[in-house]
Image (cartoon, rainbow, N blue to C red; front, side, top):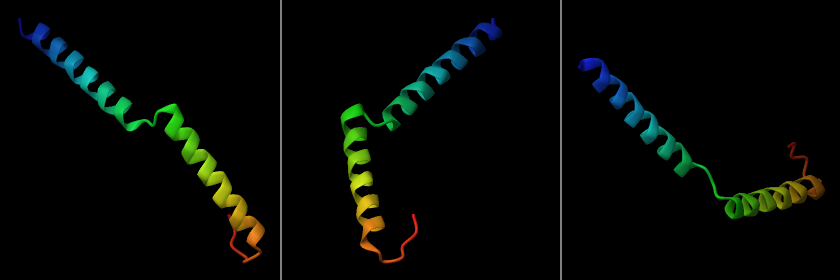
Length: 54
C-alpha cells in the first residue's frame, strides 16, 4: 500500500526536522551567557558616548 509508505516517510521526515531544529537551539546556560554578554556590550556602547546608536 503506497499511502502507508508516504505517511511513514512524512513522519520520519518530520522527526528528522524536529531533531535538526532542536540541535540549532542553544541550551539554557549558553543562552544565559550570550544574553549577559550582549547586555554588557550594549551597556558599554551606550555609556561610551561615541555616538553609536543601538
